[in-house]
Image 1: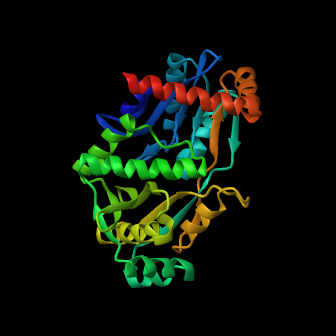
Image 2: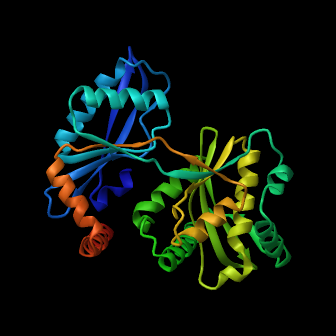
Image 3: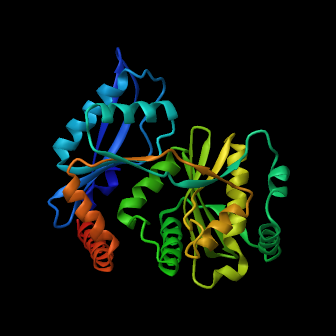
Amino acid sequence: MEPLARYGFRCATVGCWKGDRLVGGALFRSYTVPLAYATVTECLDGPIFLEWEGAWADGFVTGVEQLAKQAGSMAVVIRDCPQGEVHQDVIAAFRGRSHRIALTPGAADAVLPLEGRSIDQIRKGFNHGTRGRIRKAVAASLSVRHLTAPEDLERAYAAWIATATRKSFSDVRPWAGLEPVLRHVIDHGLGSVHGAFLNDQLLAAAFVVHVGKRATYVYGGYVDGAEKHSPSHVLQFEAIRESLERGMASYNFGMLISKGQEAGRGVDEFKLGFGAVPQRHLETLIWKRRPLLFGAIERLRKLGIGRRAEVLFKAMLIRRGNQE
């Protein structure tokens, strides 16, 4: 989270100790909501515990309360907790203090199981279109390489931004906030950036991280006009192969976004074409610390003017952060 500080994000942790041993906790980020003079505080993947006792939930919620007060939060959002028992105990602890909370359905990820399977078995699970596009890329002599040099990582980022622009995605970090993350992951063997090349021309790139036994596809994209060579398909195949060789139990393509609607359906079909299956996260917990203000902001965000204001505010933060 540290590289995002220049863009107005602040991070803090709530830890749980058993004697002198840290057994779990959560990483939170807070960002200011324009015109509200308040923040929203989020935990994106947690809390996470090595061991758990239900009695600890009350102390954890006390820590969240203190953090929310210090951050001036109108709401605290806890997403994608990986442990069902922890999740239920934390919900009960919030309710036990009469806090106003809401639970919303968790997102679904497209996850490809790897454990106990060979690359040939995995490939047989690809649909016909995916296998054909990989063959097409190989026949066109596309090659896949690890990207580590600063100039190559910038070229990869340009491919991601090109795709984000075409598909109207807005969640790719600005380069100044992402470059140190890529550098840390590569230098510490926590993942890879793969590039698909036609001769020496970079057509597409993918960023994959390895945490524990799970590989996760974070960013990907291709330059304008490269889709005729199917570079993204061969990139994913090589990333899956590397993840299998590194002993990963699963390969996570990330969130499914279409929810049955036309928008985003192509992206979801791409992920599911590799044999990935939907895996739903636990419910998102929202503590409405200042319910009237948070409700008004949420209603505004659903309006056209609210969405446009959000885009403009994000652009302003990026410009200001890039100047620091």
